[in-house]
Length: 93
Image 1 (tube, rainbow, N blue to C red):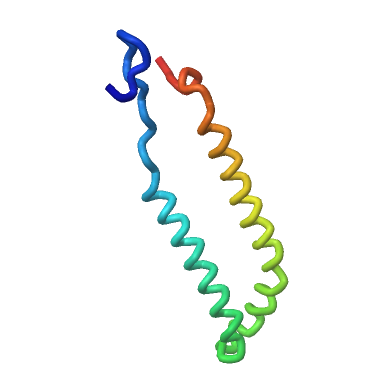
Image 2 (cartoon, helix red, strand yellow):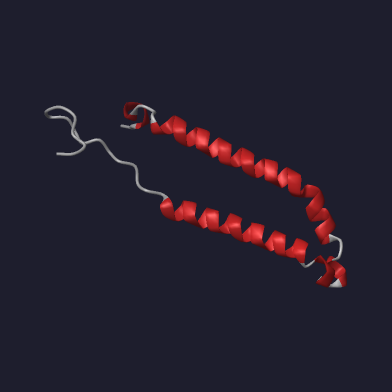
């Protein structure tokens, strides 16, 4: 039997996969990046009410890149920490 450790022990509960949520988040971030890049590339064809938008995006882009890298590193740290975390500490009774 898989998931059984020793005789008479209860099977170890397996966490449910969260691929759907991760996929949606990745697609949303990629979509947002594509929209920002298109706005920067098409700056000369924007309507008059949105002329200042590319300038603002160019000023805040470095902060967005640093925030994105920080989020990726933070999620990787959390995932690597809890991957090896003892299962007994996560169980609730």
